[in-house]
Amino acid sequence: MHLSNYLFFTTTCEQALEFYTRCGLGQVTEVLRFGVGGMPVRNEAMRNKIMHARFEGEGVLFFASDNDDAEPMRGSAHILQMSDRERTTQLFARLAEGGKVTTPLEVQVWGDYFGKLTDQFGVQWMLNCSG
Image 1: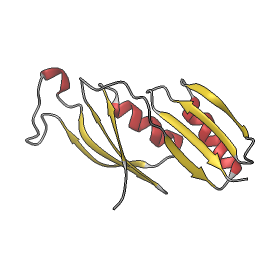
Image 2 (image 1 turned 90 degrees about the horizontal axis):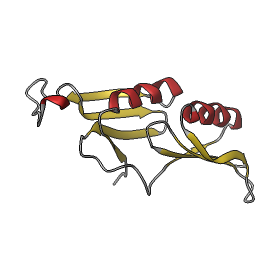
Image 3 (image 1 turned 60 degrees about the vertical axis):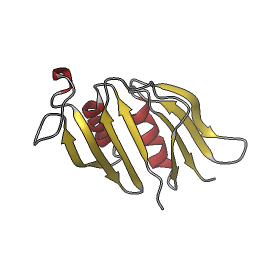
């Protein structure tokens, strides 16, 4: 058994995945689009939007799609367990661009270098680098 997250965006999935690629999390390894190659399309506004995507990087795997009736993201966060403090700092800064830091990245009371943010697409991220 393996647990992976599936992110639903309303119509910004492609932009989000491009952003995560630029941040250095990995890359899109599979994509299906509404109305392309025999894939169904519910309405014309969704044509060519992402029906299903697979995103992979070192230690990272999640899935994503556009869903015009998606619920706002809440109550869940990706946590990245890091081992390099400098890389943690760089990735946190990149993910925070256009987003909102909710817990500044710093050494926490439990001794780990930790921070939490909500990115510009509404996805919550926690980065933890062991002390």
